Image (cartoon, rainbow, N blue to C red; front, side):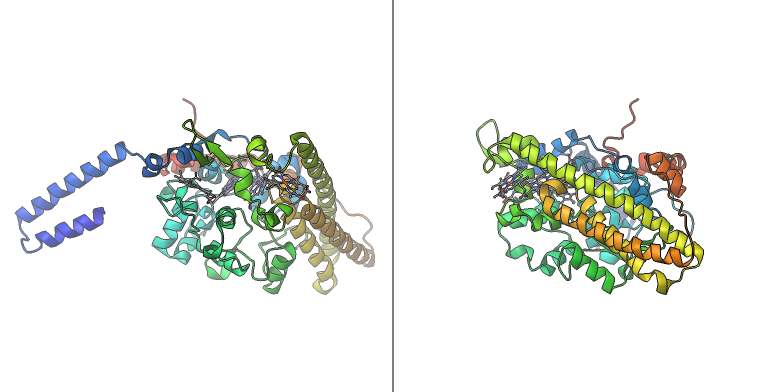
Amino acid sequence: MMDLLIDVIMKATQPMRSKVGLSIIISAMALLSLTSWSLKSAEVDPNQLKFPQQYDSWQATVEQSDREDMLAQYPASIILWAGSSFAKEYHSPRGHQFAVADVTHTLRTGVAIAEGDKGLSASCWTCKTPDAPRLMKEMGIEGYSGANFVDLGREIKSVVYCSDCHVDGSAKLALPRPHAQDAMAKIKLPFDQQDSAMQGAQVCGQCHVTYYFQPENNNKVNIPWIFGNSADDIEKYYDTRRFYEWIHPISKTPILKARHPEFEHWSRSTHAKKGVTCITCHMPQATDDKGAKFTDHKVAGALDNFDRTCASCHSSKAILVKKLDQAKADINLKARHVEGLLVKAHYEAKAAWDAGATWPQMNDAIMGIRHAQWRWDFAMASHGMYAHNPKEGIALLNKATEQITYAREALARILNQFSVTKVEYPDYSSKEKAHAAIGFVEADAIKAKQAFIKQEVDKYWQPVAKTGYEVSK
Ligand code: HEC
Ligand code: HEC
Ligand code: HEC
Ligand code: HEC
């Protein structure tokens, strides 16, 4: 707008090229900066005026400030993710209002970038903010993803917002992320041909899906669903492309990383088949004081709203809670067992390499570790798996157990050939011990992060980058 006005003024005054012309420009500029200042000070979001119930409930996700330290809950994951930033910090998700601040403050992302270092891709912003699709438009997708996470930090003005799920200013659902449009087409569910229930699930599926950054395309976000969206299909895609996220420093395994595949798990669930979507359970209908119905935009835990979410089909909350607790316990037990086996396998592989084993000898075992850890991760990275698709969770972990057992048998034979009789395993009984085992000094990382926050974020980034981290004075 500002650019356009200046353009018009410049054109209008072009023939003059005189002091008068210049003074017109200067006074016009002064007027412009005054109007933009007064707009800012009275800033009212038009969406708030038009849709107050949706807006207020959207804002209320700031009340969901609790989260859990997942590395402390299962410290074995630190060993399994050694060599990647996931081993540094990993929390369970919380309310949408924290999306930008949490990714800003985690040890996984930005510190000041060393000269000549490329740093982390801006693609990390993709699922936190409507500024991501905006910047993709402005910079081109590869221009955006090729930029650095820190360099775009000052541009990020909002958390997950109306325009992430709607045509802005209306109730019509939308999918503004190009990679999500592509992905839904890959699984033959193109967005614009779905009913409103499936469109609702797909707006969540823009972000609550697994993805990777395409190294050959400037780290562009891609959803790997060409063969389908199950763990097997995605693994086939990665294996065919010989893709890996990083080489595990202990076992030399080319690792695959799953990221919150909520959409994938849900899409195969009993609920999905019955048309029960993310929206049914996480955004139930509500009634305002005048009796008008609206969709509750305080996207939160589903059970807290049992009467509005589950009760239309399930009569007893107690029975449901018992079922969910049981599913959670079963999955946790199996997951802890697989983690133990995976840790052992990484160290047995190390012992084999140290003894002089070669790739032809190790290939099967290393592929076994890769595939087992992928399935374990596909189950673990999905928040609420025990509620979304407990059967798939159990099946993934059973298959992972089978694969890692096979890998360890192969490793035992190799170790035997090299007469290795003893393997040193690490102590991962706590987060601190597991960090020590992989040589990560958390205190140093926190110090570097705090310096970055003070020098960059506190000074130059927008208020959304600080939600929940405001220092009390
Ligand atoms: C995470 C996705 C998401 C975000 C963010 C979001 N909405 Fe919605 N919104 C939905 C879904 C899903 C529906 C239900 C659509 C349906 O069932 O047809 C909905 C419904 C609506 C409706 C229709 C009336 C109603 O209440 O059902 C309005 C109006 C609306 N949203 C406005 C907003 C506004 C304003 C914001 C920003 C403050 C916003 N939405 C943010 C997903 C979202
Ligand atoms: C633009 C990306 C994006 C979209 C779209 C999105 N989410 Fe999220 N969601 C996130 C992020 C990021 C977090 C984690 C925020 C944090 O922990 O700081 C999150 C957190 C959550 C949580 C955890 C809340 C809590 O209090 O623990 C739930 C539940 C959730 N989302 C469900 C949904 C549903 C349902 C939809 C669709 C209506 C949806 N999300 C759409 C990015 C998104
Ligand atoms: C049948 C109801 C149901 C459906 C459908 C459903 N969820 Fe959930 N979801 C739950 C329950 C139950 C939990 C466990 C936590 C709670 O709500 O008590 C949960 C947990 C989550 C969490 C983790 C919250 C946290 O803080 O750990 C996220 C994120 C989430 N769901 C997103 C989604 C998305 C995205 C979809 C659709 C693709 C979806 N859910 C579909 C019921 C459902
Ligand atoms: C529109 C109907 C409907 C709603 C709403 C609904 N469910 Fe279900 N749910 C079903 C059906 C149908 C089944 C499959 C039959 C069965 O196992 O009882 C099911 C099965 C389940 C199961 C058994 C395990 C599984 O996945 O098959 C759990 C647990 C469950 N639902 C939890 C929830 C929770 C929690 C909510 C609310 C957040 C909820 N459901 C909302 C229809 C619904």
